Length: 362
Image (cartoon, rainbow, N blue to C red; front, side, top):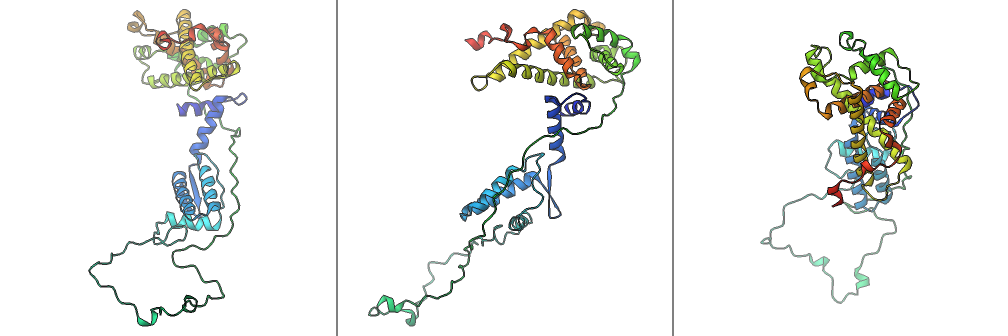
């Protein structure tokens, strides 16, 4: 589905639509999944894991400024994100230490605790020298050594207080409309489509008035009403595989979901969690049923001789979705929306057909 949604964005000629924005998000996620760290290519997933590890290490040492910096930066390493190209020197060094696998010390600079051999209980303790023993008659003040005037260096294993860190500014997530090139689509074979595409265009034009279709769109409309059984009987399965019809079906189903959700959000406000999903599922079932009945009434489907004896409802519903897929493929999203509204009048209002089924009510 992602490939065909991407093709929809490449064929887009109208202002940005929900399908167009989805396609741009998918393209951005595919283009940006790795980060250049001082000449080293690191995947976003590995960078997120490393930053979380460093954040835990800084939190262990109560360095909350660096902890917040690592956590906020890890949030910008999502697929398709654009984290900053220059990182602070302290963070770059810690990331190099962690990613290179130098585990002699912790990545933040503190020495790791090394497990050594335990002291045997049978070994006698060495007696303390007599010079270090404290005379019981000596006052405690006289036995204590004088404190040094200069600040002594921190003992081994203890970290010095780090320098203050400038807060991290999160990257702004936005999707800009980009200029794309339009790939050429191969035309369906004329021996298969013939003049049937023009007949389909007239049927669709009755439901959607004032629509002028290009010859390329008309040819693909003739292909959209094909059933796989007719492909095999007409011996064109080697030129147009049933996989192409399946992709058009899935593209049309995605376009129908966008049309239904766009119309639903204009008049409905869900009151509880899950209400929108359940209503959308029932509205989609009712819309697909109406589209299938429309395709059957107009006699648009081209089936094989065996399939035509007792066709199932799913055959007509699949062809209706394929027609929506062709309209979306060529950027005719407004025409697809008007077609659904003409076939199913309950697009912009609640319908009794989309009510809860008896099992759900029980």
